Image (tube, rainbow, N blue to C red; front, side):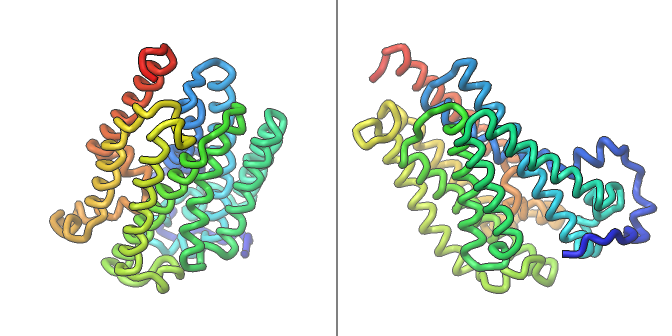
Length: 326
C-alpha cells in the first residue's frame, strides 16, 4: 500500500471547484450510512422506546458511521491510483486531489479512534463490537475482498455486528433467529451486489474487482436462491413469536408479506431481462443493485415497502405493549 502523494490527473484541474467542507463530507460517503440503520432494530423490536435506549442506539449509530467512514477513507487512499483511471471514481475527493492523502489518513485515524474510545466508555460490549467490526474491515481490505465467497460472508458479518451493536448499546438481548435473519439478508445483499458488479463489468468491459474472475452469474444465482430461502425461513421463525424464542408476539407474522415483496422487488431490479428493458441511460441505473443504499433511497416501491414494514411493526409492538394483543 503506497501512501506517497502523487499529483491528480490533468482532467481534475478542469473539474468544478468544490469547497473543502463539501469534499470532506463527500469523502465520508454519508449515503452509505443508511446501512447502519439496522442498529435501531434492537430497541424497535424490543419496544424499548425510551430515552436511555434511544440515546444508546443513536450513539452506536453515530460511532458506526464514524468507523465505516474511516475505512472508506482508507479504501480511497489505498486505491487512489486505480480510482484516478476510473471514469466515475476519479471524481472522489482523494482521487481528484481535493483532499491530500496525509489529511485523509489523519481523518481516518481520528474517526476510528474516537469510535472505539467513545464506544468503550459507553459500554465495553459496544467497544468490543466496534473493534470486531474494525478487524473484519481490515481483514476484508487486506485479503477477504479478493477471496471468493469469503468476501460476501465478510459483508454479512458487518451487518450482524451492526445489529448486535444496537443491542450492546442498550442492554437488549436479541433473538438468535433475528440475528440469523439479519445474516441471511446481508448475504442476499452481498450476492446481489456481486451480480450487479459482474454484469456491469461485462457491459463496460474488464472486471473492476479481481474476485469477480471467480464468480459467474449461474453461481451467484444458485447462491441467491439459497440465501433467499434462508432469509424467508428465519424471518418467518422469528416472527412466529416467543414460543420459538422469536418476536414478543406472533402478530409480527403480518409483516412477512413486506419482507417477501422487498426481496422479490430487489431481485426484479437485478434481473438481466428487466435491466435490458431499460434505455441506455437507465441501463446504468440497472446496476444500482451494487449499491443497496441507492435502491433504498431512489426506488419508490422499495422505500414504500420498508416504510410500511416499519410502521406495521411499530403498531404491532405498540399494541402488544398496551396489552391489546398477545
